[in-house]
Length: 86
Image (cartoon, rainbow, N blue to C red; front, side, top):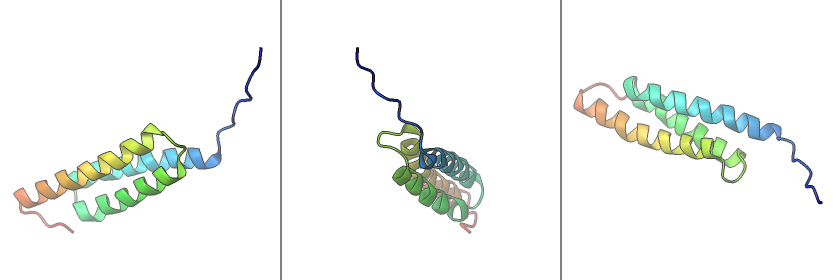
């Protein structure tokens, strides 16, 4: 019987998870409050988290998708309601 050693979680993976969670929160808040102030930095955080995360990390992938979708929805809401983007 052969056993493979367990790979310890790297610190970068943990940081990537926290960055992904922050990006998701900032992107969703940005829909209702100044889209450009929050969603653009959230997109950058999500991309950094995706670069730091291990291959196939679903949280980082979700953060990128949610940030991109939030950008579209936030801009749509801002234009329809005639609110300031900044």
